[in-house]
Amino acid sequence: FEANVPGPLENLATIIKWGSIGALGIFGMKLLSDYLAKKK
Image (tube, rainbow, N blue to C red; front, top):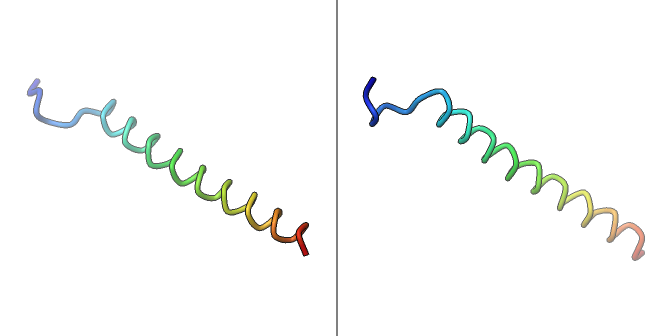
């Protein structure tokens, strides 16, 4: 087992990291659009 080869756990961590970043971005955009809609 080579340490420099990315293992399934590293791939999973990367997927979770980018997934959470994407979810936060979508959530932020939803909050912003709701805020702007109420402001009108």
